[in-house]
Length: 126
Ligand SMILES: [Zn+2]
Ligand SMILES: [Zn+2]
Image (tube, rainbow, N blue to C red; front, side):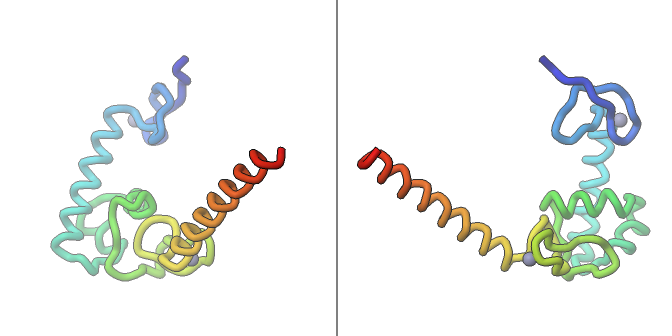
């Protein structure tokens, strides 16, 4: 059964979805995304405050696009809260810095190796 929620921008009742936006706000957000993306294509080294001023898109929303990994800054912008969730290093896109991402991938691989190993032994001796 579909779960009801409210659009997180205008508050309109909607069917709960991953982005929690009504179709109107979703469309507007995508349009803003395109505007920011176009601006970054022209000025790749732009800071968030500058993008906000030039495109009229709220800084908080630009930050969301960056955290979603849909946009990337050329340089980390220390004036915004875009930091690796693991080590706190300023980053340019997504949620983690390159070093932590690599380490997490390694840990995942390691865990799945151990998982497989356990499965093998429990099958043999269990
Ligand atoms: Zn809405
Ligand atoms: Zn990190």
